[in-house]
Length: 289
Image: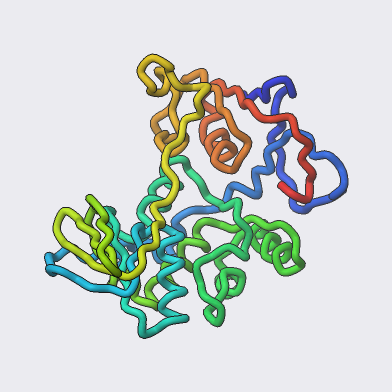
């Protein structure tokens, strides 16, 4: 059972369309929109060919260096390669392969769709866009996923399957061979030189004219859940990035937040746990969420 604080019990429902766009949306789960298949065999999920370079290569000079190989860092890298093909740049990241943090976080909470619409992706202009990639894979999609494509084409809010987003992301990364200019190493310090920057990692020293920091989001705990004495989160307060839904059963859990991560975690946990969902009381309209 899931209870929304002060608003009553949440209703689990399935719908295939948005109606009454100007009406206030009652608290509910649209299961069809966040329950897409994951790891379909016809999509490419092999991560080995996105591995970062690990060998020792000495001192390196670049026009631009991106720190971070997540979605934003990789998206910037693809746009740089498309727009400035002669610019010498690289990515530095401590992870083993491109977009590892995004991949593992969504996997841990059981996320199967994205809140971001079809317009949000890493492909530069002139490359295949996410919506067109999804249309090419239409024979692999569910009826509700096909409906979401229709909504996107008509300019309405739509939900993107994570399978489609990940496969499209990998397709673009492979096209621009971003893994071939990405180095696995942890940045230890950055020094300002006369006209350049020196980036010192555990294994290498890089110099560059420009640095782009794309280190992504970190686990953040609001001050209300922090112990003032030792400045650490209270016992049993867990950020959504740090929970593995497959390991949680028979618990009494308070979930704070009304985003897709909260909805995904609730969907994965409600059958085997007692959940209370704490959300703000602002009006939400059916055509926006």
